[in-house]
Image (cartoon, rainbow, N blue to C red; front, side, top):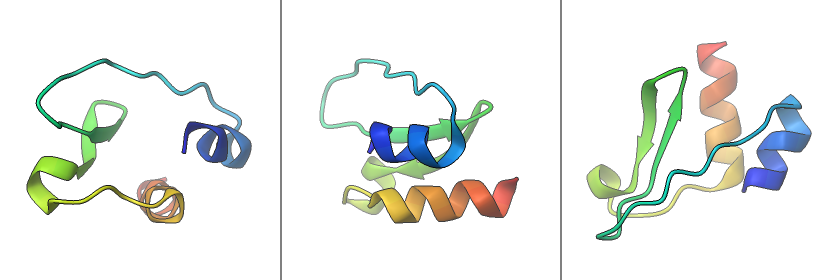
Length: 55
Protein backbone atom coordinates (compact mmCIF):
# COMPACT_ATOMS: atom_id res chain seq x y z
CA UNK A 1 0.00 0.00 0.00
CA UNK A 2 2.80 2.45 0.84
CA UNK A 3 4.30 2.01 -2.62
CA UNK A 4 0.91 2.71 -4.24
CA UNK A 5 0.46 5.89 -2.18
CA UNK A 6 3.99 7.09 -2.84
CA UNK A 7 3.54 6.49 -6.57
CA UNK A 8 0.15 8.24 -6.70
CA UNK A 9 1.03 11.29 -4.59
CA UNK A 10 4.83 11.44 -4.61
CA UNK A 11 4.88 11.70 -0.83
CA UNK A 12 6.79 9.79 1.80
CA UNK A 13 4.69 7.44 3.89
CA UNK A 14 5.35 7.18 7.61
CA UNK A 15 4.69 3.92 9.42
CA UNK A 16 4.05 4.09 13.14
CA UNK A 17 4.35 0.70 14.79
CA UNK A 18 1.40 -0.34 16.91
CA UNK A 19 -0.01 -3.44 18.51
CA UNK A 20 -3.27 -5.20 19.11
CA UNK A 21 -4.30 -5.42 15.46
CA UNK A 22 -4.68 -1.66 15.08
CA UNK A 23 -4.27 -0.32 11.55
CA UNK A 24 -5.12 3.32 10.96
CA UNK A 25 -4.45 5.77 8.17
CA UNK A 26 -4.24 9.48 8.90
CA UNK A 27 -3.64 12.48 6.67
CA UNK A 28 -2.35 15.69 8.25
CA UNK A 29 -3.37 14.39 11.67
CA UNK A 30 -6.92 13.52 10.57
CA UNK A 31 -7.98 9.87 10.75
CA UNK A 32 -9.28 8.71 7.37
CA UNK A 33 -9.44 4.95 7.98
CA UNK A 34 -9.53 2.72 11.04
CA UNK A 35 -9.37 -1.08 10.88
CA UNK A 36 -10.55 -1.15 14.49
CA UNK A 37 -13.72 0.75 13.58
CA UNK A 38 -14.40 -1.04 10.27
CA UNK A 39 -13.16 -4.53 11.14
CA UNK A 40 -11.16 -4.85 7.92
CA UNK A 41 -8.09 -3.62 6.06
CA UNK A 42 -8.57 -1.00 3.34
CA UNK A 43 -7.53 -1.38 -0.26
CA UNK A 44 -4.95 0.98 -1.72
CA UNK A 45 -7.62 2.38 -4.06
CA UNK A 46 -9.92 3.08 -1.14
CA UNK A 47 -7.25 5.11 0.65
CA UNK A 48 -6.22 6.92 -2.54
CA UNK A 49 -9.88 7.85 -3.19
CA UNK A 50 -10.30 9.15 0.38
CA UNK A 51 -7.17 11.29 0.09
CA UNK A 52 -8.41 12.73 -3.21
CA UNK A 53 -11.78 13.56 -1.60
CA UNK A 54 -10.05 15.51 1.18
CA UNK A 55 -7.56 17.31 -1.07
